[in-house]
Length: 189
Ligand SMILES: [Zn+2]
Image (tube, rainbow, N blue to C red; front, side, top):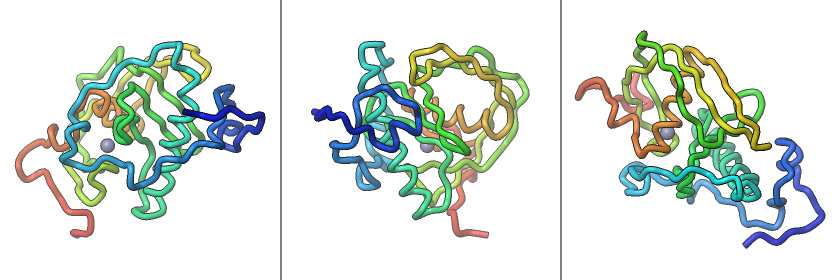
C-alpha cells in the first residue's frame, strides 16, 4: 500500500507524472527480476484499466530502478516489460535517451520484411538468441497521461518493441530462436 505525501519524487517529476508518488515505497530491485524458467514469464499479462492509472507511476519507477541496476551490472538494457518484475500488466518502459511509457501496446502493422539479429534479455542476461523480427511496425499504445499514441518504428526500435510486447504475451526470445544453434553465451567471441 502506497503512503501518499506531498513530496513528489524526482522520478515522478522526470516522467511528468501526476500519479501517487513513489517516494515512500520500497523499490523493486535486481533480486525481484524474474529469470528464465520462472513460470510467470510464460503467462499472458492483463490490460491496464484506466482506474489503475494511479498505480502506473510506481510500477514504472520500479521498472526504471531495475533497468538502471541491469545497466550498471551488465552494460545493456533499453527497455523492460512489467511481467519481468512479476507485475502481470500490459506495460512496457523504454529509456534510450528519455523515458517512454507504453500502456496496453498493440501492433497495428508489421512489415512482411524481416531481419535477423542476436537478441538479448534482462531475464537471461548472458544468453543471446538469434531471432527474426519484422523490420517495420506501427504500434498503438496509451501514454502515462492516458492519451492514445501511434508510433511507426523500424530496425532497432522495431525489434526492441517486438521483444518487449512478446513478454506481455508470455513469449520469450528463446521461443523464437531460428534454429537449435541460435544460442550464444554473452562472453563468447
Ligand atoms: Zn526480455
